[in-house]
Image (tube, rainbow, N blue to C red; front, side):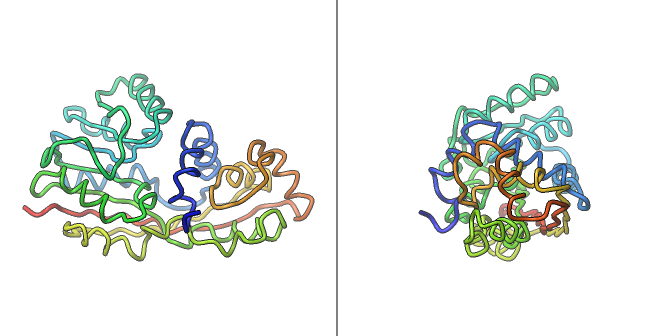
Length: 275
C-alpha cells in the first residue's frame, strides 16, 4: 500500500467512485465547523484580486463542483472548464451547473498529470484540495502551469499535515483501529509546510500566501461516525464503513458519547506563471 491512502489508487477509486461517500464526509465536516472562513468564498476573493477579468478559467480536481459553480457565478463572461478523474463527480458538477443556469464546460475524465488541454490557454487555474492526491505534486503543478498563459495565475489550496489528528486519537482509543495515530498524514505530499516549495519547484512565482485556522466540533459520536466511516485514513471493518450508525454504535461501546473537537490549518497560495 502507498504511504498514505490518498496516494493509493484503489482507495481513491472507492472514495470518489460515487458522489455519496464524498458528500457524506464533507457534509459531516462542514456541519462540525465552528471557526474559519468558507474556502470557496476565499478562493473567489483571491481570484478576483489576482485576475479580475479572465477569459479562460481551469478548475483542476473540481470534485463536486462547488468551486466550479462559484467561479462561473463570479465570472459569467468567462469560459470555465472543470477537470476531474471521477465520472460520478463530473455528473454532479454538470447537474449543479444546469440547476444554477451557469455556463461552464467539463472534460469527460482527465488525469491531472496529463491534461488534454492546449499550452498557454488559461488566465486562471484553481487546484483546490486535490494536489495531495499526487505522489509528486510538483509534476502536476508544472502541468497546470503549462496550460497557463504567460503571467497567468494559479490558486492552490491545501491543509496542514496534522489536520484532524484529534480524530485519529478517538478512533485509536476505540480499539477499532489502534494504529490510526501512527499512519502518515493524508496530506503529506502537499501540505501547509511544503506547498510553497512544491509550487516554486514547478516554476511558478508565489505572489500571495494566506493561512487560516479552522476549528471543528462534532456534536457526538454519531456525527463523528459520519465523517470517519468514509475517511480513507482509517482501516475499519467494511460493515461499519458502509453504515455510519453501526460505526457510531461500536464507538459508543468503548468511548463516552459527547462532543469531539479538532482543527486544521488551510493554506492558499496564489502563484504566477513567468510573464
